[in-house]
Length: 198
Image 1 (cartoon, rainbow, N blue to C red):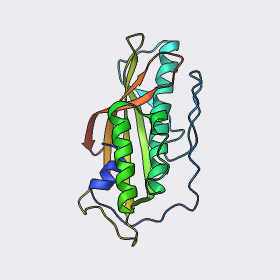
Image 2 (tube, rainbow, N blue to C red):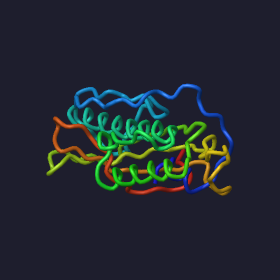
Image 3 (spheres, rainbow, N blue to C red):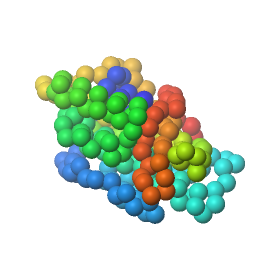
């Protein structure tokens, strides 16, 4: 469950929508240095789990997997700020469960006249596992989302979330890549817990 899904199901405090929402852009397919989509998750450095040692190729793949997760979160942020419209590029950033989930949430926002406002603050990106040269490359990436200053509003500018939402959630997602010449895509949730580690 991502921060925006938690926002759609949990609680919200009032927050102002940023004046400028960047346009939706395409992700680069260049594997060496993927383009970073602008948004709240962009440019946050990532660690890797204790005991996970990476060689040069693996370190590059891990970096690209983290950027793919950040791009997915930034794209979702842009779509939901626009009330679920213009979501047809989800397939650039997601596959499988996450592609279906993202499109369903966008349609729910659009159908109900909802929009995301305020700020989701991301931190603590970490690679917990990486496996290359399987039938497809696979990584698991964890991150923290502070959603305390974000809300989901309807057409009357009323909150549509509950009062007991957690302020922070920690999510772990599975990211897949068909081969080194294609981009990573966020495929599914591995786990979601309330609160974040220190």
